[in-house]
Image 1 (cartoon, rainbow, N blue to C red):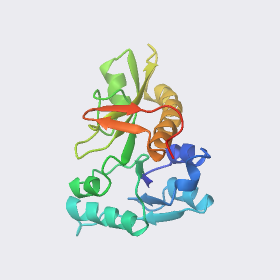
Image 2: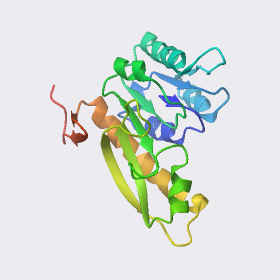
Image 3: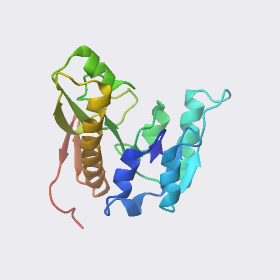
Image 4: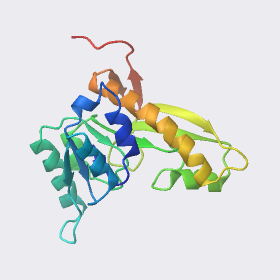
Length: 198
């Protein structure tokens, strides 16, 4: 799990009995964030790989990739991780990196999706869970759910409803990925229902 902040999506994954045993390490780009405390509370290794002036994007990507590979990680969840990683990361984990985004992609990509949607005056926004590639908020979509934007909404009133949907969709997508029930066909992702084949 890669995190940068409070870790509410990480907590939703810890709260899922099918996912929690698979969480091997929680890696943050920032020390002292609450997500690392959540990891420690669940006896999961909490690791910081902070960017420095000596690390360009490629070197930082390799440092994060290597830290995960050294720990036997084969599936990665971006749970509020606010760094853009380069191609060598996705080559190491092909179709095994999933992210949650607080809008209906491809609308409002980037770090301020909820605020951008409110500022644009949309009537509907939502949550997207997608596989991650080298482009920001671009990879094939696994799950989406729409959320009505009320006339009196601002970021503060809309964000809790967005988080509630994130906390349902992300675990559902991660379970499907861990159970090898995602079929990727170009830009389309199908979820095979039911239990995986032995």
